[in-house]
Length: 119
Image 1 (cartoon, helix red, strand yellow):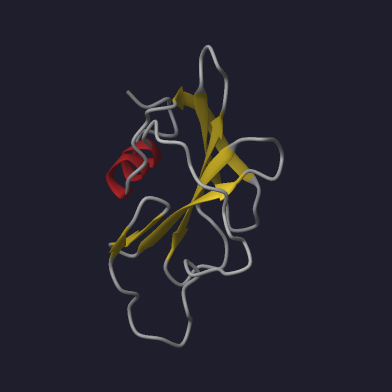
Image 2: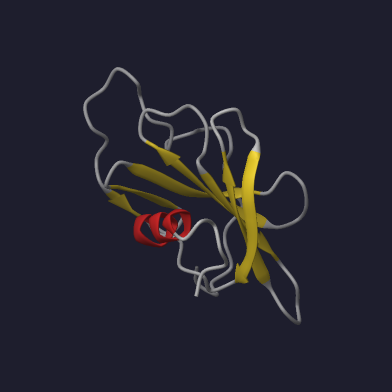
């Protein structure tokens, strides 16, 4: 994540949602939308508080696999990295720095490391 303030999201469109009947989604690397290597990640408004979250969805899956909830705090901002199962039940959650780089590689490493706190 960068320190750049994020614009208000336009939740009326969902350009990140995969189209089940289409070919492989195009590769996109934008500030609030990243699609590559079979995954889509997008920055969304956290419905539980005033923060932001990063939602990661594996192509073809209906629900997010990882959600990185960014906790805005003037003194010590941080993020919560969570993993959910297919039923939406939380498997794990760890606190990471606000600068944590959530990528396909870091997500896979976290899972392979039995959901222990990264880094």
